[in-house]
Image 1 (tube, rainbow, N blue to C red):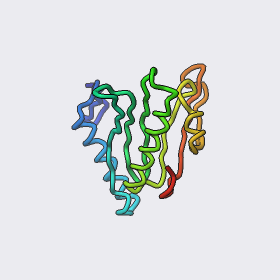
Image 2 (image 1 turned 90 degrees about the vertical axis):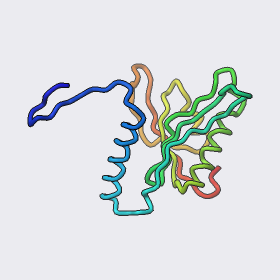
Image 3 (image 1 turned 120 degrees about the vertical axis):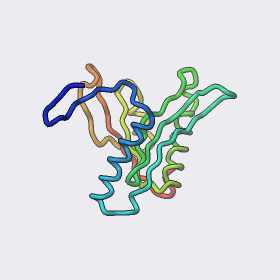
Length: 151
């Protein structure tokens, strides 16, 4: 721990526990709701949607819903299963789940070497970009507004 004055210290923690992460997200969420003043934005949920072949994981997503928006943190398809529409089916399932949870949009990012064209083809729009990150690539921020008949 490094002292920074006034009796404060800064500590770096590798692999913070689930309970610490949950506590920190809760603190930020409570503060944000107090500033937004809209009780309809209180709902939040962290979840995964998995695609399995028997017991083998072949595709998955991590999602965090807050403020009626779903942050698609990752979507992954096993390399030997790509090109079989699994990603599209998984994304449609994510969109359907988002609508059931009251989300009005989905947002996330994809690097140029990953799948920004995949998202664009499925109705997402580029809303921002970090050029040359990682070096030699770009990071694309993507968003799709949802309606009850989006998927």
